[in-house]
Image 1 (cartoon, helix red, strand yellow):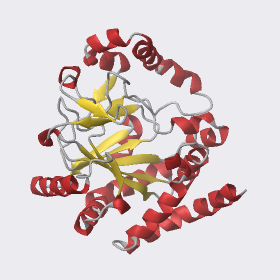
Image 2 (tube, rainbow, N blue to C red):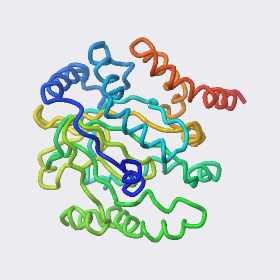
Image 3 (tube, one colour):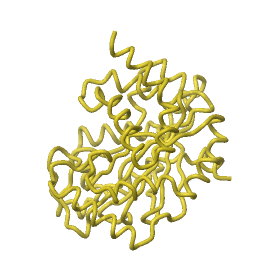
Image 4 (cartoon, rainbow, N blue to C red):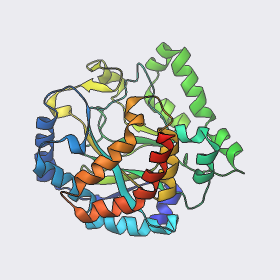
Length: 315
């Protein structure tokens, strides 16, 4: 069963949704949207090409994803809704010379008891839904995951979770203090120690993964990394057109999970997080121009959270 596999693995890969010609067309359209090269990540409502916007929204409304969502409701025991932010990334790669890349998307939330109580619920459900418009090769293209790292989220299993991430802690220390050593060791060795797996979804299929799962964008191999330059920190790679990586993301989750998400986000100091409430409001309104049904569904789930945290921000 789909929901049982997801609960066990922390991720699932859908059947192929985009055909090869559709992927090529979308990649060409994205090349134009990112032609200014100012950023390697753009929000959907910043795009100019209306046909491309419609294509991206239609991806997430495909019957294959609808069927998966209906199965995953068995985990949450409540309504699951596609949610902002809808974001598109170009050549968003980790530079292994600077950072190993492994992280949990929910890491900031786990600082707070309020969020922990939500994450510890057996019905917790919050995930990313990603589409990757290329194969996963030596130049990256999809994600790596640490198997079962989404498990043991309860008050009584914290100890087991901490035991399981000891290899992760060790590798983090090695990378931080012995970086030259890290960089000469084959990445497959660290993947083995972490019990990690590289995912190879067909381009144009969806990857849905638990927000608590330790993961990273599959990095450019250490051998190929010598050919690649990075700009604006260690996430924006400069590659040839043939090796350009495109990823498309949104969220899928419940109201409680969104509550936890914003409890953390609005406490952060960076501008993106501080403005994220407005970003979600703007995207939901923007999507209404293209898919009123989806916009209403998102608004129904999000409105109580929006009202709660707008009041908090006014205090």
